Every structure is written in C-alpha cells, then in structure tokens.
Image (cartoon, rainbow, N blue to C red; front, side):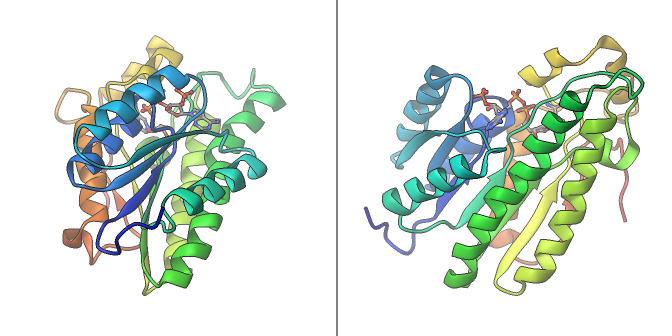
Length: 249
Ligand code: NAP
C-alpha cells in the first residue's frame, strides 16, 4: 500500500516491550505509521499493534532477529511492500546479561555484539539506502549511559553500546545533510531488561542525580523529539536521557 507523502512511516526494532513499546505508542499518538519488529513473543507484539491502531495509524508486526542479515532484509522487504517508504528507524532491540570478563564465554561476547552492533549495522544499512534515495530520514540508535561510564560485569554490553555511538557519528557524517542520525543514551529505565542484571548493577544507577529510574515513556518522548521537526538541528549527537549519570559536552 502506498502511503501519502505527508504521513511518516517508522520501524522500531524490539518494539514489543519496554522502551520500544513506548516508542511505538508515542509514534502512533503522533500519527506515524509503524512497523513493530519483535523477536520472542508474538502475542506481546500483537498487543502493541492493537494499542497503536487505536490512534488511527497503520501498525504491523514482523518477526526478525536483528542479528541475522537475511531476516533483516526480509523485514525491510515487508516495509517496502506495506509502506513503500521509511522515514524513521529506531534501533532499540537489545539484551543485557551480567558476567565478569574473567568468566565470559565466546558465545556470550558474540551474542551481545551481534544483537547490538551487527543488528544496528544491518538495519541501518537497509534504511540508509532507502533514505539516501529519498533524500530524507531519521535514524535513532538506542545506546546506554554505560557506554560513557563503563560497567563492571557488563563489559560486552558497554563495549557494544560504545561501538554504536561511534557508528552513529560516522553514519551521521556519511548521510548528511539529508538523513539525520543520532543516538539516545538512557540511564536505568523501568523495563524487563533489568531482570537480566545482577543486583550489584543497581550501584551503577546510584550515580544518577535524580535518585530514580526513568520511565520508558520519558525515553520514548525524547526519541520522538529527535525524529520531529523540533529535532531538525540534531545530527551525530548522543542525547543523555540519564538523570545526570553521565554529563556530556
Ligand atoms: P526489554 O524490555 O527487555 O525489551 C527488549 C526488546 O528487544 C524486546 O522487544 C525484545 O523482543 C527485543 N529483542 C531482543 N533481542 C532481539 C533480537 N535478536 N532481534 C530483535 N529484537 C530483539 O529492554 P529495554 O530496556 O526496553 O531495552 C531497549 C533498549 O534500551 C536496549 O537496546 C537496551 O540496551 C537499551 N537500554 C535500556 C536501559 C534500561 O535500563 N532499561 C538503559 C539503557 C539502555 P522480544 O520481547 O520479542 O524478544
């Protein structure tokens, strides 16, 4: 189906839960059609789709492991068929797992790097080709404040997020002035991902000045801002949605 040129279409990876779900719903409220990528639970993805559709937008779900380039190609083929364009990509899919470097296996390192860094590369490559031809678009990569401060027992996670930060700045340079590419670096946020972390990790969040975790909606609204007309001067930036745990500038 061809979409009217004044209506935006977005892809949110990992849109079935947590921050990704909140982004999908903020986009839907703003009248943006949205493709919801999920990996594990189709029922949760369907629930998000149904909620998004109550705002009158087209919402679709697509199962794909972002670390698999063939599945990512299939995801973008579905977007081409359904929307015929892509204006916004949010690279949000992610996992976390606490383990020391001393105990980390090759498989644990690989899985972390594959989902975050390869996943961001595979989707950004597909999006960049389309947005470059369109001469417009926004790409937002979800990193973490841990890329800036490091984290014991999360070296693979922090390394992947640091890599995404450098990738963001490089892609912003390649795609300017047509496509704006930014990252958002949340601090601790109330989502399921925190159940994958050992209790010791909570010490990382005690560095936060506001003494609380973020709500997914607070991160989602910052992402919406970066994709909006109000965010038109931002490219190659990392927005620190972290309550003061890391200060940039
Ligand atoms: P979450 O609630 O656990 O959600 C993670 C999402 O990623 C789910 O929708 C999941 O899909 C999806 N996903 C996982 N592996 C995938 C894969 N291989 N392919 C496609 N999708 C996959 O976590 P969250 O806290 O919202 O995390 C979202 C992003 O924010 C992540 O990049 C995370 O690193 C970042 N972040 C989170 C925090 C925090 O404290 N929560 C802080 C800083 C940064 P299924 O449910 O379908 O498996």
